[in-house]
Image 1: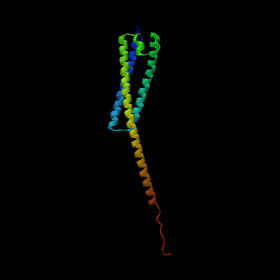
Image 2: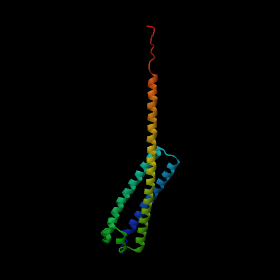
Image 3: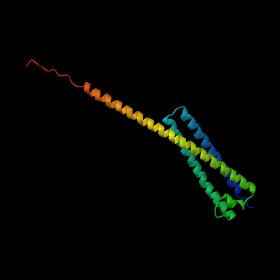
Image 4: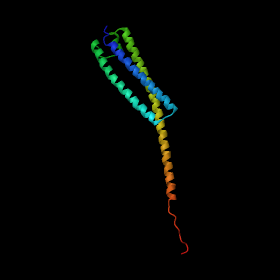
Length: 161
């Protein structure tokens, strides 16, 4: 059994899992904050930090692609799957890899569920803001219409002539 590269990739996946957990907790805390009160600045900060974290995860994913290719090359596999690995690595290594991949998938699904809820909340907030803007613009038009009426110059009409 070849186990040279497998512990390295398991550790790499565990490191990524920690990052996914941090993203999950960050997303959950933002969701809780939004329920208490929505601020545009909060949303902008959240989006920027989220993008930074996702970029770091994408970089780690690129590293994992390289590691998976190395494992496939060392073990003579055409594709990196648990089924293919089951005959080439120890059961303990396979279980560790399977566990970390399963946990990662679960955390990603939780993040996606929260993202869906946040997207709905943000859409509702956007619609409420649009409605408020339309009301404000209508009030301004009405105010402007009455203001122009009052600004007319008074004229004296001499009826004695």
